[in-house]
Image (cartoon, rainbow, N blue to C red):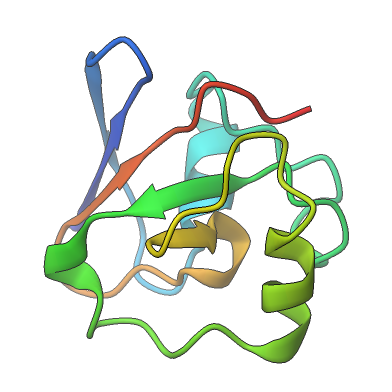
Length: 105
């Protein structure tokens, strides 16, 4: 079973078992991972599931789409080159590492 590792702003790492095809956001919300709000439920309309994707996974996910790019301009924490909306990151067979930003709202 794949795992998602969420590094919290204080450096604590929360590891959660995920399911192939589920989003990193849905996995976080379902398991009560702090800092991933997912207010819109994954409909790409709120940016409250903003995460920083670990560079080792950059090639595993598609490019940032136009809608995601627009929403990333609305994040509460600074946007970085590795910023992604976790509702757009679908879990595959391997593990995924993300860092949760200090603010979502």
